[in-house]
Image 1 (cartoon, helix red, strand yellow):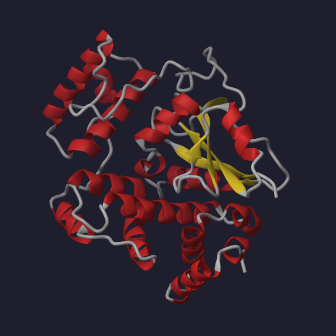
Image 2 (tube, rainbow, N blue to C red):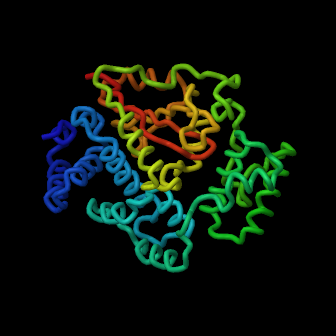
Length: 340
C-alpha cells in the first residue's frame, strides 16, 4: 500500500478504497484517485519514477477536479467564463477531468450542458489570443521582446474573460489597453479590472540570453540523487513538433498565470526557447504536499522554499521551464523536499 494511503484514518482510507474499486483498471487513473483522496503523492511520485506524461496527467486530473469543485458553486450553474477557464486549463484531457471529478464525488452541476452549448457555438475553439505576435507588433508598433509577451498574455485573458470577439474589436481593445498601460495609469487590465498589470521588467523574458538580467537566487530546489529528470520527455515532445506530429498550440499552452509567475518568480537560464528561438527560458518552482493548495505553491522567495524544505513532511518540488513570450513550457525535474 502506498504510504500516503496507509497514513489515512480508517474512514478516509475506506472511502478511498471504495473509489479505487469503482475506478477503471488504469494505473495512472487509480494513482490520481489516490492523490485526490490523500492530498497528493509527494512521497510516491519520486519512488514510482513516473514518466513525465503520467505525472502531468495525474496532476492535470487532480487540479482539474479541484477547479470543478471550486468553479461549480457546489453543483450550481456554471458561467461561460468559468467553463472557458476550465477548458483552457484542462486542455486535451478535459473530458477525462469531468469524468474523474464525478468518480471522486464532486458535483458537476450543469457543466456537461454548458460544455455542450459552448462547444456547439464554437465558443471553445482556440482559446488562445485572438491575435498573433506579428499582428500585435504591427498594431502596437513593437519589436520582438517581452512587451509582446505581455500583450499576448493580456489578449489570452481577454479571450477567457469575455469570449470570442471580432478581430477588429479585439484590436481596438488591445490598443486601448496599451495606451492606458503606456500612460502609467492604474487601469492595467480588462474592463472589469480583473487582470493586473504584469511587471515584465525583471529580465526573465529578455529577448536575447546575452542581455543583462537580474538573476534571482534561491528559488530552485537543490539537486538531489533521487531527482526525476525529464530531459528525454522534453526532447521527445520537441522531436514530435519538428516532425509535424505535435502542433505549436499544444507546445505553447502556458496559461497567463504561469507566464506571470515566470516573470515574477522565475529564475533566468542561459537557454533560448526552442520554439520561438527568440526569448529566454525561466525556471519556476511549484511545491505539492500536505497543507498546501491542491494546485501547489509557486515559490516566490528563497525563505519560502527553505521553510518548506525544513518541514517534517514529504513534499515534491516541480521545476517547470517556461518561455513567457510564446508560452512554451515543460517539466524539467522533480525533487523531494521535507524530511521525516
